[in-house]
Image (cartoon, rainbow, N blue to C red):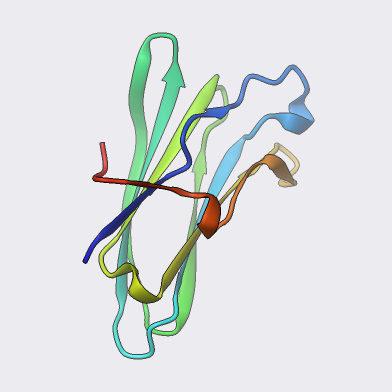
Length: 122
């Protein structure tokens, strides 16, 4: 059964470059020993004018392995990451916002338990 997750809205409007995400890393861990997992990621820019998709990617994660993808979110006032996994039984996801120096921004870090379940991708 497919599962869907969202970071919810992430404020990226800091006046300090150290606290503003330049990129977002999305990591999928497939703990299933037999079956590959397909992940689909959508990145949205959020602002006063609404929600606009700025990136999307689908990829397979081999059994008992992990993979990650990096997306640009620079120059966004806010963003949201949505993830779909085909069989979420043995799959964990995480999202990390990183500044221009590739340092993780703690406020933009979401482990699996912090991701909000949603009914479908937008």
